[in-house]
Image 1 (tube, one colour):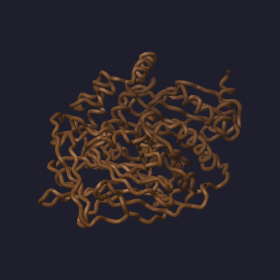
Image 2 (spheres, rainbow, N blue to C red):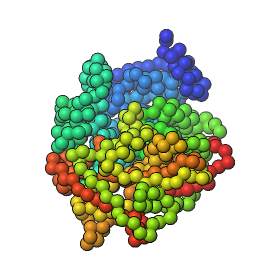
Image 3 (cartoon, rainbow, N blue to C red):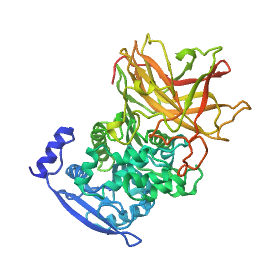
Image 4 (cartoon, rainbow, N blue to C red):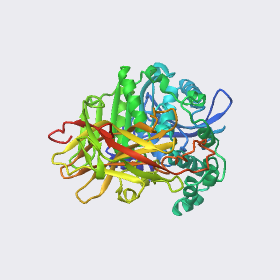
Length: 551
């Protein structure tokens, strides 16, 4: 089957707009020389049109396979497409150092584009995850020639996602390091490792000290993994040149954002959206029932992205979409079109109570609940926002809820539907014999069969000086959960989990205050969760009116 037939079949399956040209000329492995002498290998997909704007995709994941198909699909719709391998990957010279060279390499690539005879003076950018980080690295300095961006499951600042709640996103970072290293090994060897269930990665996620985990997973020392273990504190100068959020308000190009409720970068991406909106930028936000690698996410981002590029880069506007489109999960949910995010909402407090109860009314009196957390047997993570799609998303939480180190609080069956949309937070009053600990809070939907499906969650690392602590050791911990849009159906129950961690999604807290990369001593301890009139531990949900019909 010719590539033209492949793209035609793919376009029909994806319900893409009609092609504007059937002829695409591909030139591969073009050497683009940047300011320090490094050569970046680049492919050019030229449409059979007299003049067309350009779409730039810079990636560390190679220029073959699915991205080759993507290049042709975009080019057939009337764009020059330039796909470039980031330095140190897939034929490009130099060493890949995440986020270090992307601004300068992007600007030098833009300068190369300006010298091409087919250049029309306008370009856009497209890409997911790291392909989105490189967009933000360039965007503020690209000038008026940048006409549109399509940023998918990504953010302008990666630091807060790496250290969510000031913990360490171990599963995401180590899995990504292993994935990058796997790109350098033969294909058959990689398939064998995947078939075996990636035992080396599993051993590495359980290994201490963490400074050795990269070698356990990949057989080599991964420089950026070592650096991210060392440069952990919020004020670390290391991150100032590796995050691009401080200049996001200088970006004037219209930006389309696509994400999923169970994506690893969702909170940071929604922060980007809010800052762009406040600065008056033109934006489009779509959040669906997806994880970081969901096939549905990739399909939606391609359709949304092509519409956005058509309107803002090619000047072919179609019907004006709502600024925000979100999918409301749960029974009776569906798609909602909104003027902004988050929508107006009423805070609804659900209070933790004795005997595992969860209720709108606080409890006057009640003995604290106690759990023992042992980092040598850390509370496991189950589903949720993970890098690997096969393990991510909503799963039945009953196995982890049966553990003695997990507290659960469950409401009575709902008589009426409850729809929530927006930020979710918890306030947990606790006392611990340890000064160093984590607080993990998860909201679940318990269906009529008793299955407990995770909706959203969050973790916060507690250490001396971070939160006020009274003489008895009492501390109030604010926990920001992932934002959500979800409908709890009548007859379902709300459930809140409280535990001391979610490993290996987050690195276990050793309980000693030792440095992240070198800690090996593990200290277990009791903690008490208080829920009385003076200490009303609660989950706070953004309650919104449910529409009469789903969008």
